Length: 439
Image 1 (cartoon, rainbow, N blue to C red):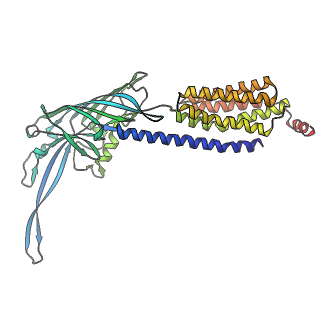
Image 2: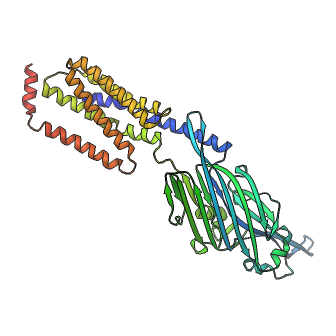
Image 3: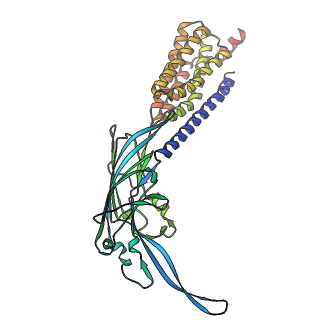
């Protein structure tokens, strides 16, 4: 009967797990709404120089009458050049945005970008050829960002010592801005320095494209739980309760394509969009253990706690001689299952620690009062309540730990089983069965 009751209680526990998943889905929908209005995950600081090139060739065709005709076919390509050096200094001010009960981490980032191009990267275009026309007047400096709507301000844009105006642009699935580059700077030799500052908003994560012969990126934020993404890893990151500071140093040899390419492929078989996705570095504004993760983990321990409670009652019943009816087992089991619904509901309105304390206190108090009437012995009921309080205290200890939860759960299970085995090692279960039959 006890085994049947445990199997029966697995039904509401499974529904509880589905309910937690449903609430997670609702939170994801809320995060999507925040991303649509404030800005989603952002990838920024991709700086390129684009130079259109037109190549002409004479095509000889034969008409239906057998005459040969000639026409000139013009092919237009765009040469993309990466900077020789790139420096990015970014500060991300974190905040949260709420949709109903659900909060999503967001940020406002101020990104200062500087660097320079060297003309030798595209000097092969400087030589005049009769079949090639370089559109120097259409050359642009591109600065890529995930979403145009996330850009709140573009300030201090200087290219080759001149302040220039920017316009909306895009490339390889990324939005952004572009600015003209003077022909004098392009054809004069030497270097083309640039600098600008972006103010952008986003949520969840912030990434950078370290596309240069040598790129140095520094990011500071007051968010205390960063999760660094991409490769290589940041150099000696500093993390504290007041925030973090991270610095990346990325070289040309850290990627598998060169400084110059044409159109949409950085190399044979590698589209630009894939190359960018593989070479980004940045941070996710991580929430180490949120309420739904803890509720998931709590529900996963539910069957174990119910089994331990029922087994304790079963041993207690046979050792003390006090009969506990199957209906009383069911009532206690329903209370144990209801604990997880109460925990989920409260944790959406107060902190998880407070919600757990209130739910556990309500559960222990309810079962203690119920057993006082069922057993008609106050001291036994009080002992059962103390045991439950200890058990749920251990569960809270497990849920609070992120790295050692599996070890703690295994130790808890082993400890409870060891106590039960040692407490009942001298019981003659055959004699107990005969005594119960005689009664």
